[in-house]
Length: 358
Image 1 (tube, rainbow, N blue to C red):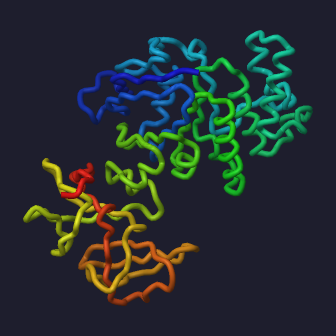
Image 2 (cartoon, rainbow, N blue to C red; image 1 turned 45 degrees about the vertical axis):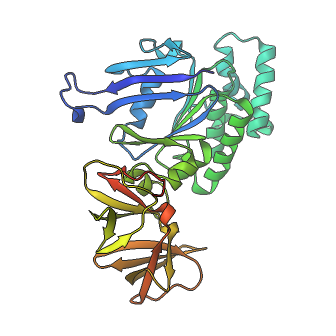
Image 3 (cartoon, one colour; image 1 turned 180 degrees about the horizontal axis):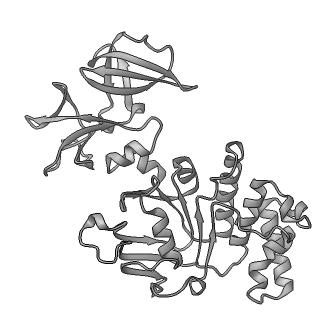
């Protein structure tokens, strides 16, 4: 296991990049602590798989360094980085038994057979596959095949990091929650440094202690799942995480305050200096209906089970609110209230309020 440091890392697939747009990864500086559970989260094309391949040694970065426990491994090939990787599709040998699949990474490194037996038994018990150790891998269900693939990544106790690249993509939805829970449990037991790459916010937020959110080759925020939800530092984070995503509303700044369609909106704290197009951000969970507030007209109501999502129009601006109880009918006139400590100003997407009331 190792602390992983990425220093001034940039990568371009072009031989002679000239501008920021030519880079698949903009400058990235990150530290991942030994034994932590991390997720790289973002949409397709944001750079997360490129970053994973650079860490694993499958790709050489155009600029910057990768360090494991302070040792520069940037030029080392994958087999010298002591990394285990689990991919979208299970990497197992169908003609081998489950036992032999789990044992293969150890036998390949000359581990004594007694230790192989002990380690395979330990991992099999964690994965709850002890009863199938003698079965051929070819006959396993897709979720069990992925369990064995995970086990192959975890069976060695000398790896610097275990990396998961969209490991639940091909798993049936009703089985995903079981494997997510199992993976979290495994991390807590083996204490290995783990990096989980996904575009699925549920997978990232349920697995990781720290989530790295990426967009267009940049890291836009690093934080705990709670921090990403409660205080997005960029409107992309607010929109990408949460269902429905954060309301991002056009704003006008004047007289020291923020206005939405001519109505003054109280913010969480003081507005910081700077330039850029202003927007108000507030999650639907913190918008409520009341007797007074911003006048609006209900456009649509969506029943999402335990709650309703009410979409209302303030002038020409759509605002979503998560509500309980009997919702107002479409066409109704209502008043919206924004919870002040959860109402923020953004400039060109970036957070522009201090969080400290003036």
